[in-house]
Amino acid sequence: MLNKIKSLLAFSVVLVLFNSCAKELSLEQGTGGGPKGTYYFRFKLDGVQYDYSALTLGFRETFAAPDGSPPVVYYTFTGKPTEDANDLTSFGISLTSENIITTGNYAETAGGTDYILVAMLTGPDFSSPIYAAMGLHNPPASAFVLKLTTLTDTEAGGTFSGSLYSDNGLGNDVKMVTDGEFYVKFY
Image (cartoon, rainbow, N blue to C red; front, side, top):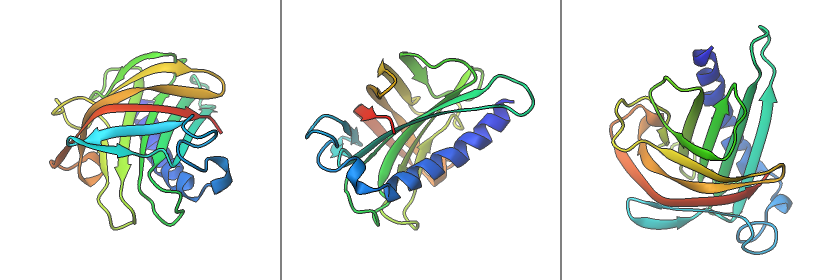
């Protein structure tokens, strides 16, 4: 079942990231979306500060399993540095589990947990490299860690850090994420 979840997750992450780029701008316009500064998504990449708060998005869904196994709970937290719908640059973090997801710490691993954590950084167009963390490097240079500090019916927030790998997480070129923090509204 875990392999089915990983396949669904990888497809869903890409779908949500690209759909968030095409999302109607009226949902989250302005710095941090909503009232100015309310929602944000920022981090350091290899020591350089980035602010992806121009468009922020929280997404959650529960998928019923056709084989009668427990349903899959899926959360995604995404930020974009620009409101330009043609610019695909975004950073997304997805958390998937057959169990209830609550506030707490979640770490990228190469299996053996009851959840899957994926982080993905995309560039401005389809030819740009994609850096990702999804438990494929064992051990990773620095495991990607998400700490959910807020999780309500309408909003989510927390911190994140760790290694992202080139070639959709399969490569060996590593980018280090530090001081990541987000606060997003669910749509």
